[in-house]
Length: 167
Image 1 (cartoon, rainbow, N blue to C red):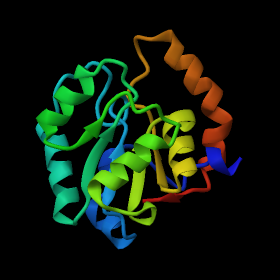
Image 2: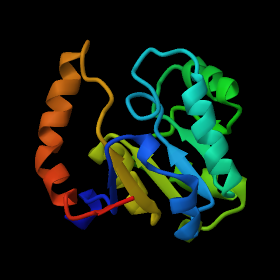
Image 3: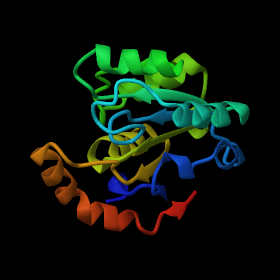
Image 4: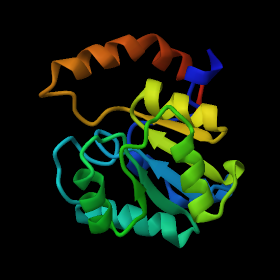
């Protein structure tokens, strides 16, 4: 069950500060794209997201998009607009993309965290890779009945994460 439990909880990414991550020794923040950084379908980052990225960077934390999106152009265009590295079609919860990102950025597992909205991809993958896990609430479920089902199945595991620390 521990594999499905997030170490940290936040309502959204903006509750996570560069200062809080720096205090914990985090230098690389892997981030899910859709429903974590922005709602599905938002093509480019806004100024608030860029300011958040800048806050992370000011504290020595690199933001890195780790997306399961099947369309290569989606994470690439978004990451280019945000001026951050990325891996698209990452295959989470499998660990190779986590390892590849850490190797690419020259950091260890202890210096890495992942932030995401899904237990079965982001949290499970992060725990399997040995990195800190931060679970946020999904931004928006509207528009896809499959998302409602997926998040409903996650409810018991989200309850397990309630004991996780708030950042």
